[in-house]
Length: 232
Image 1 (tube, one colour):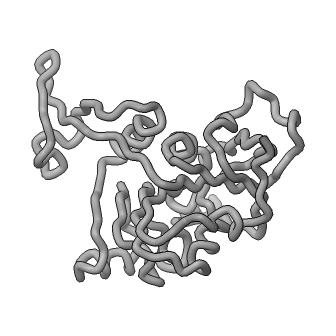
Image 2 (spheres, helix red, strand yellow):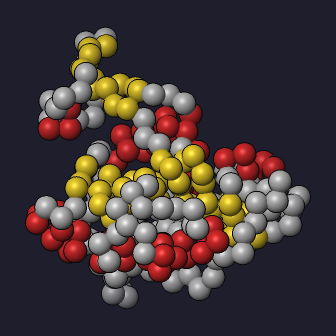
């Protein structure tokens, strides 16, 4: 039952070339910083990454883009990364853009064992090309397939040796649904607490979905876009 590993390097050791990864986070909030850094150091390549966004040029998944370790991105928003734009326009990077709610639901469906669902998002646009469409109660919908991954990598606030996870506020974002959709789920946490220390009613991701857990360190927690106002 003890799923604790020593560090990020041990946690990602089984990730090989050409695998598909789900990576939690929204912008730079709630991203698995330590695991991404370990992937850069590992040199693994040809990755398909499913993530809401691709980080920024020098942080988050942007680090893996810099080293050309990502072959394909499946994302919703990528507007803060110049290197991503360059690689996409030059044909170096394959990209699948998905409406944000659809991306979240495709991940959730993958974890819940639902192979397909219908959504109105994207109907009549390029998003719907090549996909089945149907009409329900007079409204048009497009069928979307689940998303699953070889590995899911998530970041939580607290966790225990059994893999139970608690996320902190908006850092929860995509992490819970992605934690469910990987064949193997890696969780890095800010604080690893003893078994029994977490209130069962406060657990967001049950340990049954988590295979490896470790306590991270030196989190930068960057702010992607800082907006302030002058004092009145």
